[in-house]
Amino acid sequence: MRINHDNKSVDMEQRDINYILPAYVRSYLFYTRNELPEKIIFPMFPSVTVQGKEIPIEYVPPLDAIAVEIAEDGAGIPEVTPEEEVALDEKDDRIKELKEEVASLTPAPEDIIRQQQEAIEQLEDDTADKQLELDTTPEEVSPAKAAFAEAPKLAGKDPEVKGIPVRLPKQPPGGDIGPGLGLSDMQARDRRDQSRVAKDLKEEPDINEAEEKEFEKPITRDKDGKPVVEDKDS
Image 1 (tube, rainbow, N blue to C red):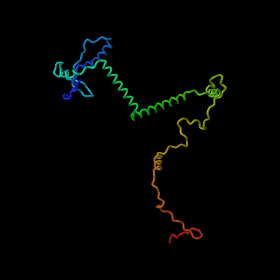
Image 2: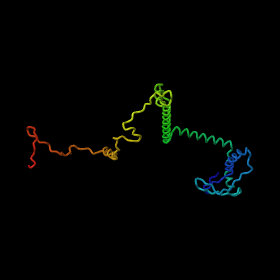
Image 3: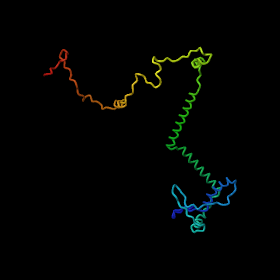
Image 4: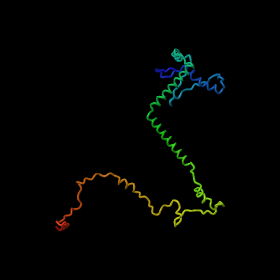
């Protein structure tokens, strides 16, 4: 492949076809049990779509001046052999492994957050599993407690335990009030409680006692300590 800056085009070479099409031929061999195809049908597609943009394809004969120029320009560059291709792939894989090792040594902040979140989720899962294990573990019950718990259920049903009385809980004088009924002394919550709480929590300015005004006159007393009543008409 040649990058043509002047023409702003991608100039394809024979080596590009030798690199791309063998991959499809290998897929053909897999389905035909290693029988090579007799020919390759390559329609002359008018364009190719790359990143949502349609780029037209221009076809030229092999002996056209542009085709000859492309072949002569790339003649000095040897074509990659299959052995060299394998070596290059191994090198790319090694570079990818080294990049992953470096990234693991210096994690980005988002990686640290993700690792912490995964650790938290794992801890929550372990806690939930432990709680489930505790909830599903059968509790050891003494024989006497088990007999006491089973007696009300079996009374009147099993002939061997018919004489055992069924113990029922005590009911209020008016009978069972039923589910969903509130107590008689319960009242609905005042809708203004939130505003009152906010008003009580609101900060108020500090009070300067020196600037406070007296609302009541001080009591005047005589020499015996008795309060002196002032005449209102005076």
